[in-house]
Length: 322
Image 1 (spheres, helix red, strand yellow):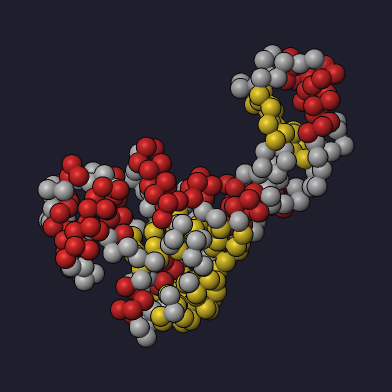
Image 2: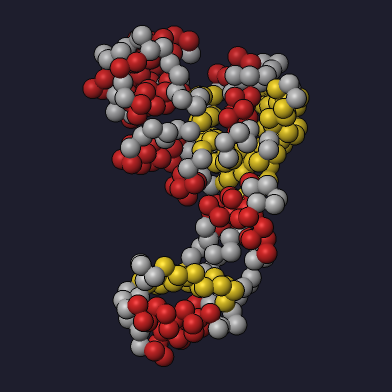
């Protein structure tokens, strides 16, 4: 388990991380979310023992990161933001160097090295100098060094940054596989990543936790939770539907895109709009090639929680009852 208690970090007059307390258990994939400058990377670095906290405590697998740093770090694999490495080494030399640092020897060393090379598709570039690799391959090398000693805990700061869609899919699949017997913390600004890999999400703003829930629970905070979205075939049907649906007692607002012929019925808090909208469609015999009930929009919830009071979006959402 990872436990942080009243964790804080100050840089001069700036309080980057402010009194964070949370714990993560094996089998969990925790998504750590925040806007740029919110303190998420600073928190990752303190958990990994890369920087010292100004206050509070981090415990990893029962080891205090400051009192027993070697024991704590032996349990962890850490991928820093940007995947820094020794650019003058070949991939093979770099992995050998990390294996030495981790104390891997003999058959175990050979097996673990082979595993990470295969799982991360590094075979074609093992003899290539790291600084000549593409950004995507450098990220994969960074993941390989984090995994080579088969740690119990993985701390991954922006693990899919710089990867193409196929590579992102492969890394997310790998994280899902690893989470079966490891504890994983993923710092990310990519909200789709939360849906793909995380069982829990913490959102921080100005160094403080503003939400700690499952992705599903966070989506349920959205004003689009149980909104009905549909697409029409004819512009005149879209306009007629906009008028009729807007008049429903269950509907708080109607949003539409005239070019795409799309309409979204945003419900009042706690209301169910699907049956009423469906009844209107059936009564008018409209052709609706697409209709779905939304679970909520995580990006909207993220903006609501992280934007300061007084910003236009935040105030508008609060007025809508979010």
